Amino acid sequence: MSFTTPKKLQLPGQISAQLKGQLAVLATAVLMSTNGLFVKLLPWHATVILCLRSVIAVIFLLVLRIIFPPPKESKKNTFAFWASGIFFAATMYTLIIAFKLTTSANAILLQFGAPVWAALLGWFLIKEKPHWEHWLALVLVLGGLTIFFRDSLGGGGLGGDILAIFSGILYGATSVFLRMMKTGNTRDAMLLAHVICAVTGIPFLFIYPPTFTAFSALAIIYMGTIQIGLATLLFAYGVKRISAVQTMLTTVAERLLNPVWVLFLAGEKPSKAALFGGSVIITAVVVSSLISMKRENEKPEAEKPYYEEEKGNPA
Image 1: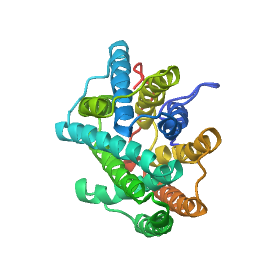
Image 2 (image 1 turned 135 degrees about the vertical axis):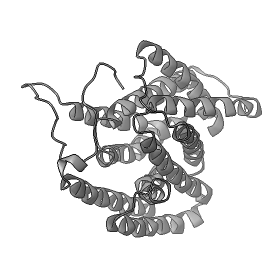
Image 3 (image 1 turned 90 degrees about the vertical axis):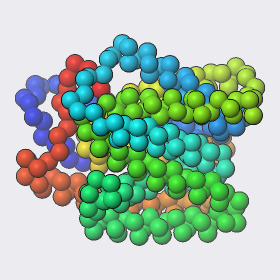
Image 4 (image 1 turned 90 degrees about the horizontal axis):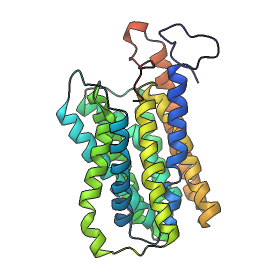
């Protein structure tokens, strides 16, 4: 995988800002890959898990915000900020419910079509015209979805599979709105999403009151502070220092690890059709992203997007 040439002299043994970004996003992917496992292990309703996880995440992120104040924005895009928060909240709602209604492998692999949906939505929202590889990836992703649906129609997980696809579309839209923010504070947009999930999830605490055990308490604290809270901070740090394509390729680790944790620790085995359909989707997204990366690298230096170098603030 190629890296953009650093803009400043790098001393021997010094890690570049972009490599730090890669490592931060990779760590994010590993942490996020445990999401499906704990959703499966916790005996609570999906909306209750989301609400309590977001409550803890909000507290965690607010404390970090006080310790590491975000940089001042040169120009704030209010619409993009609110749209990012709302759409990311909807992404979390649909995905966590999908985890409960279908297999973890189905949910996470079906959502992986997000970069393709982002390319198409970017065409309508910010006039970024898709290239031929995006259209080819869309056809292959639709083929992979067809394989999934043939399997889920007889397996009873159709509702969860549909929600997972919708979550991918919402996640693709979120990435477009985050790009619209440009120099805006992406950390606060993610914080807004968790505030929305925490507030809107309160009624579900009374509809589906959770029963606490030592395991459930420790699990939800881990999910709120490490799996979501720390991952959000690492992602906000890394996403500004590497390209969107590099970010997507690095997060493939999440899609691969998520069903592995569930298989070995929760005993949930994905079907052969899910593995085949998922491999089609992953191949389509990765290949199209590599082609886009090659085109980006062939552009003149002045036309390439700017990725932040190391500064005093963590994000």
